[in-house]
Image (cartoon, rainbow, N blue to C red; front, side):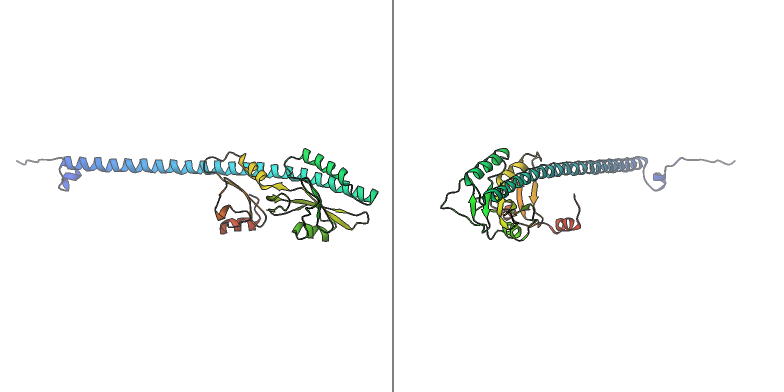
Amino acid sequence: MTCIAKTSTTPGAAAGMTPSRYLRGLLVFGLIGANLLVFALVGYSLYQSRQQYELRAQALTQNIARALDQSVSNSIEKIDLALRSVADELEQQLAARGRIDEEVTLAFLAKQEQRLPDVEAFRVANADGLVILSKGLTRQERPSWADRDYFLYLRSHQDGGLRISKPLMGRVAKRYLIPFARRYNYPDGRFAGVVTAPIALDHVSQLLARFDLGPKGTVILRDADLGLIARHPPLSGQTAGEIGNNGVSEQFRQVVASGLRS
């Protein structure tokens, strides 16, 4: 008579583990797997969220840059048109009278200033660079622009067009300005002087402050040589906030040098 007995064993039991220990092991591995899956999903969600925020920040930055570019371009066009009008008026007076009528010209300049309140003042210098007409200018006070880059350029270029200077300390206003300048001529085409329409840097800073950038946002306006023109919010007392400072990262320099528009 043959007797056959069969017993049911789990893999854990076959390996010397009791069923309860085996089940606890499965539970632990299951919990670890579930946590890893949760971490992976959270990480992916955070990555996707970061991507969305970066795209949103990029779009916002581009929109602000376009709005600032449009605002600055419109202001420059208006100033240039006014400078052309002043230069034409001066040339007409020189052609008709052989001289500039001080009273008539000051009234003409005042009218232009009313139309463009952003401009600090319209000023006229003669062929020697001496400022001869400007509001707030006394007869004893004759500042010279003979060493200014825009004056030297316009004096030697008959078709110099509009010249925009880097920020400099105004010799009449006694504060930082961005001068816009045009040349005017005698009837025979000789250089007669320049007319300027400077904008105070304070006005540019106020323009930048209009944009809502959030608590940690920054907008910076630099010239073609990366010199600082204006910044919001300002960095008072720091080198990075000084007018003309061109301390930027090498990566930023490479981007600018590449010719990318944005």
